[in-house]
Amino acid sequence: MPRFLNTLLFCLLLVSLSLFEIQAQTENRIFSSSIWSPSVHPPEEPLLPPIVELFSEQQLEVSFDDLNHDTRDLSYRVLHCSAMWKKTDLLFMQYMQGFEIQPILDYAFSNNATTPYTKYWFRFPNESMRPTLAGNYLIQVFPTDNPDEILFQQRCFVLQPVLKLAATVRNASSARIRLSHQEVVFNLNTGSLNLPLLDEDLIVHITQNRRWDNAKMDIKPRFIDSKTLYFDHVGGENAFGGGNQYRLLDLKSLIGIREPVLAFEEQKGKWKALLRPELPRASSPYRDLPDLNGKCFYFRGQNYTRSMDEDYIETQFIYAPSAPLGNGDVYLLGGMSNGHLDVRYKMVYDPGTQAYMLSVPLKQGLYNYLYGWVPKGKNQAELMSTEGDFAQTENEYQIYVYARNNGDIAHRLLGYTELNSR
Image (cartoon, rainbow, N blue to C red; front, side, top):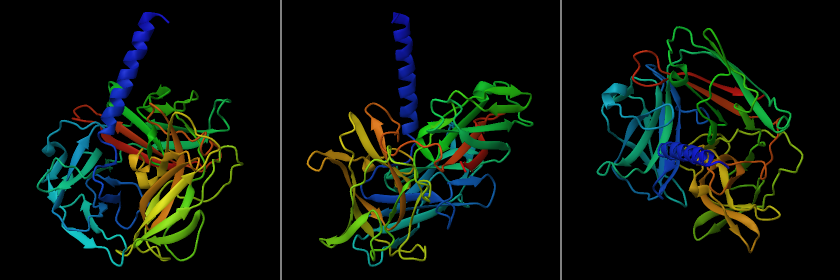
């Protein structure tokens, strides 16, 4: 290969790695071993996305558990991020009204739980912190006396609904992947927006089931006709592997056994769930089972009412392919990992059992999950070898449209839609 091509490929690799590292700084992450089950969603709506409209009365409820089971002074801040999920240099007053740091005042202790914990929660926006600019935001929680010690961070969105999208999902156009992939096609009317440098002023992302590891970032239109932009690519730019229906884990009650649970056992005063070994589904026929498209939510009992009675159950996952998958790692994907590859949910291959193993504490509730394969050196999970890719799988897709009009200090989130492949 000519030297200049080698140099070009090396430079492209550096740009790709740099972009990944920048985005990794703002992904949903937990930095403290005692923090579990963080969630951000509209109040009383745990399955809805963390989005509020600008200057509306809408709020998000942020909650998390501290398994130290003690009270401590905690605070939070909300940082503005670019459309590409890089922390911006904007001053606080340029994107928010109120105070930069707010104390977390609401908390409660667990009831009758073998794993005691303290639950904290707060709502945003509020009277003391209200965004004035639509876009991407990062919520960070930390000890009040040490703002540099971030316990966890979660993404959220502030939407200014100016742009409308017409979107649909179809089987991939390419015959090579038509039976395994789905294609998100849509058009967008820019209306009265003035976007002189369209390539820089408009940024569009697509996610599948709110996953960010395999998101399609900064997609460009295939065709422009006056004010209408057409994103109907046929070369795979908008194509996602269909994956498979999510597996279901029901931990809402310790009474009765529901697949894939083999047994609940009490060991040293703690509850443990033993799951049967699970096999790859790539070579199995597709089964159209109902799922939550990767979401999870926490509750105990049969009435879907959340309380302080949910316990933590040490849950043992066993993924047993016929042979090790090669040079890489198996991750558990789903709502518990908040749409990112989380080291807490990375499995370890055990030669003795000839299976990938993971033991992790999960709060009582319902969970959707998949086993994802991440080849060494990659930052995206693929499902072809673990779960299979089927074009008929029911998936949800989210489209985010950011635009920077004349005079704007940053890209604003001006369009959002969520659609189903059915």
